[in-house]
Length: 290
Image 1 (cartoon, rainbow, N blue to C red):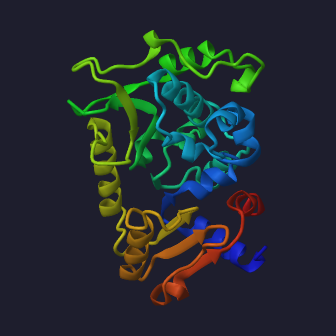
Image 2 (image 1 turned 180 degrees about the vertical axis):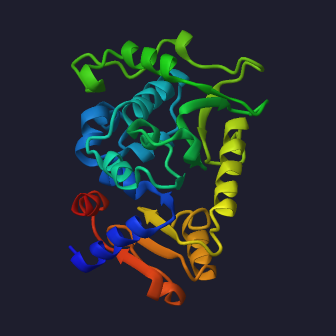
Image 3 (image 1 turned 90 degrees about the vertical axis):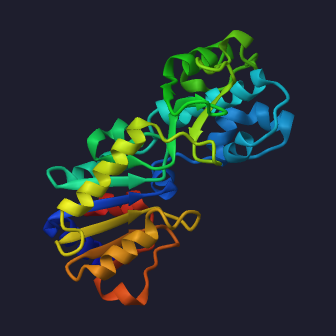
C-alpha cells in the first residue's frame, strides 16, 4: 500500500476546515456489499437456476412474468442490501475519521449505509434514490413511501432462513395481497431508483439537494481549505460527483482532491499537484489511517 499517500491523506483529513465526501458503489463494495459470487449464491441461487442470471444487478432487470415473482426477487434484494448491515465496518471507520469535522456527503449509492453507520441524516444527499422507498410506477404523484414493513412480510412469506439465507422449500413468489400498489391511482408501485424519467424526486430529495448547495456555498468551497474526498466513484455517472469535484478543486487553490478507488484512482493533470490518488481497497486504506 502507498504509505506516503496515506500519510498525505491523513494530514489532509486533519487539516481541512471542511470535508465533502463523494461516494460511489466502490465504497459499499469495500464494505462487503457485493452483487455476485458467494453473496449472490447465498441469497439467489434458486433464481440463478430457474432464470439463468449470475448476479443481483442482472436479476433486477429480468422480465418476470408475474408481479409475485418480481417482488419475491426484489424483496430479498432490498432486505439484504438495505436493511441488513454491511459485512465490514468500512462506513463506521469513515465516520470515525471525520467525527467532529464539518462534513457533507453526496452519494449515488442507494443502500442507506451512511445512515446505518451513524452519519447525520441532515448531511447526506442521496442523488439516485433509496432501496428503502417505493413510488408509484407511473408516477401519478411526487411522493415516496417507506417499505420496510411490507418488504419484511414479503421476505418472511418466502420462508427464508435467518438473515434471509436460502432453505429447502424457499418460495420464489410472494402472496398477491402483499404486492404494493399506489394509494392514489392503484397502479403497481416501483422502486425509488433513478433508472429512467419516472424517478420521483420527492420533498426530501429537494431538501437534501438544497442543503448540499448551501454547504458548498457557506463553507467557501470556492476558496476555503476544503478536502474533496471521492470514494469508489466509477465512470457510469461522472457528472454527479467526479467532474464537479475536479472542477471545484481546480477553481479553489486551497482545496485538496483525494480519490480512493481500487484500480480507478485518477485525476486531471490540472490538479495533480493538489491531488492524492490511491489505488487500493478503501476499507484497508481507512484502517491504515485509523
